Image (cartoon, rainbow, N blue to C red; front, top):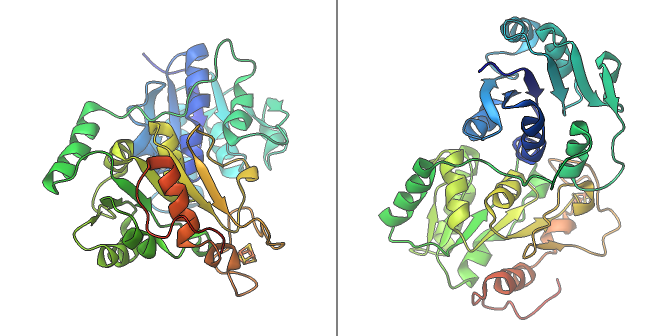
Length: 340
Ligand code: SF4
């Protein structure tokens, strides 16, 4: 059956994952939706139960520029959507909705391109990003849908196979040491790997291979890397099998939320109050409580503008290790000490 509703969400991967409750709420009302999103997020969403078709938009690659926008707009127009939802407030998303010819276009009133929408929704001034995005759906008839991925049995089998091939069992500690923004990377994952008593699986993309190598060197035979070698769906399946994910304020945090695995989330230049913090019952945040320069930007700068990067450097292995021990019961050498 042809979807009548289009959602255009081309933000970062973590934002797309946090958009899944909105997708579920809209699908409940309008039936399965088509979603325009980035190639990495497309791979994650293609089996989501709320989604009929995922349409890839490689806005920084093959579909870049006005020509790419125009081409995709023409493809969308052929699908004759009745309505489009625009959780991402950019002019590019608005342009796609206009080119698609969707007569109803709903987005946030404070978006850059709000003038192009037919319905402008007042944004929440605070609260978690899930609830902020859900505002676009209007009042919900039932409970708030969960953040979810729609992993398949094949994804889970691939995750289990990856573990079996290395003689590992569920209950390991997962590390996601990477981030696009340098200042959001906690610098002591390798030292933490040396201090814990459990197997470790390092997750990440091709850019994180060097970080993973440091961790493997610190815990030889006990740490294993999937960075750059498994796709996002299998990475999410591995997170699902972990006892805990230790992560920065980055997309893997939200993957863990989606699969129900607790996190120890290390926040440096950003703060959970920016609406992207973890909030599961066993999740823990480790952050610097006494640094006047925090937070210093909404995403986290590539390098510390003050040059010292104290927001991360002063979060000790002992503090993060204590959080890991509290969530998992794992032994972590030195984790009983606290402070910087
Ligand atoms: S300015 Fe402060 S919060 Fe920002 S990166 Fe540097 S130490 Fe961290």
